[in-house]
Length: 167
Image (tube, rainbow, N blue to C red; front, side):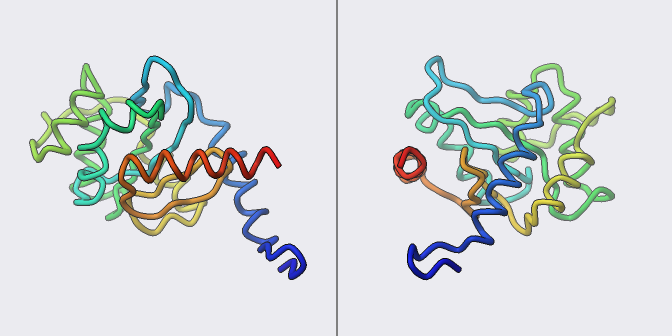
């Protein structure tokens, strides 16, 4: 702890590590909901069966309307050998992943599919980053916002972090 600045140096170091790990991911390794004019990007570890993940996803139009791109990583909290994992794989393997994810988050069971997919890698990355619950939002600076964050508050958080990082 830097008492003079009131900064947790360990957390800043963890933020840097998270930011660097997330930056290694390609867009093709995620499910991307992107506005025409991207002002911010957030990576979200999500579980299809998570109530608050569904609530966050229900605000996707508002989130994108604020210029926020959402990059979803599938994180079945119950683990790799679970029904949530199977749903995540089915969503990933769907012809239209965005539509399949939206439908699954609305409570529809996705058509069972199997293909080469990164779901286990997403899960392992979440474990490495210390993700314990969903949704878990990784901001551009590597900071984690755990849980549901309404669209307006997410925009405000991203704007304030942008201002802080410019100092």
